[in-house]
Image 1 (cartoon, rainbow, N blue to C red):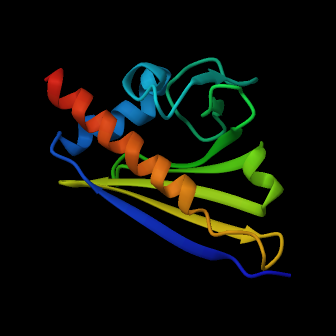
Image 2 (tube, one colour; image 1 turned 180 degrees about the vertical axis):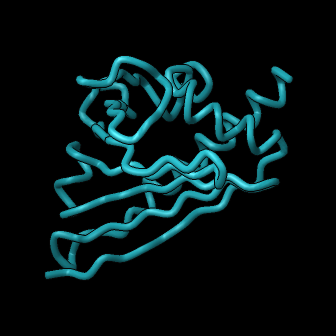
Length: 150
């Protein structure tokens, strides 16, 4: 079986890192408005009833116009002090390529870093560079939004 691999993308941010982190943790519902070219729709999935991310929170994110590209994730770690949250992908189009896929957002002053850990279904499957680019683009849009709405 393929080994677990890791890749990351770091996005420089100018907004306050705590505010940036809280946006992802409590206001993810705004992503289709803040980053419309990247996130088309986001919704809570049972049993989740609030946008405040806690361990066990689930969301479904659509990131193309036709609804074919999507993922459903669950928060598996939330560290308020470290400004860090880890999501495990439960289902979605990317799971055709990977046995497992986790994404961790860690926000520090000046930087938003996403680290993805994934296990390819076979050696012909691509690295998740497309998804890292998407996360970087969303980070830039969120940072711009926070700068404009200080």
